[in-house]
Length: 124
Image (cartoon, rainbow, N blue to C red; front, side, top):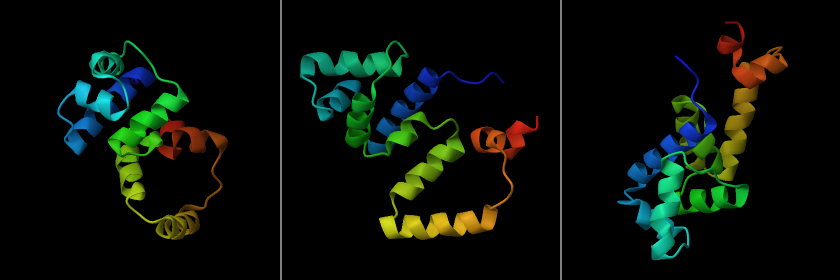
């Protein structure tokens, strides 16, 4: 299966987050982002149809409107996206504790390749 492009991933995540949050239309999301009604629909449409990317400030605005972490919108796979949403629901203290437990549990001699691709993907 070919790897999805970053824009395809971003597009899919916006659609998923809109559904998750019950935002009924591209226009509604655009208005939530602070855009005028005239520009709201076309801007979000360009994101969802992979015609346009977004800069970091726009990514932050979009994430805030969708009430998701910025990283969720660019997560490379479903599992990572789900984990990011779960982490966002935790308090800062709970995230710190979980991070410490995960480091203990999974601390290995990971190579840089493992960190980028994961141990399963790096080997084959």
